[in-house]
Image (cartoon, rainbow, N blue to C red):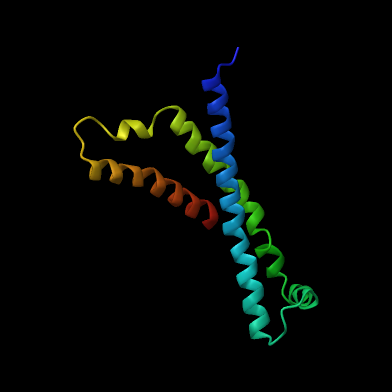
Length: 126
C-alpha cells in the first residue's frame, strides 16, 4: 500500500519530468522561430503563414529545424528522468556534508544544474 510520502514522490517525479520536457520544448521553439524570422527578413517578406510555407518550400532545412522542439522535448524528458533518479538516490545530498558553509552549499547546488545543462548541450550537438 502506498503512503502519502510515496504519492508525493510520484507527483514530484512527474512534475520534474514535465518541467524538463516543457523547458526542452520551449527552448526548442526558439530555433524554428529564429530560423523563420531570419529567412523572412533576408528574403524581405512579411511575416505571414503563406510566407512561412514559401520559405519552407524554398529551403528544406527549415523542416529539419522545425523538429527541434520535439527532439529537445524528448531529450529534456530523459534528462529530467535522470535528474529525478539522482535525487531519489540522494546523489546530490552527498555533495554537501557537515561543516560546510552556506556559500559552499550554494556552490554545490550549482553542480547538478551545470551537469544537466552540459548534458543538454551534448544531447543537442549530435
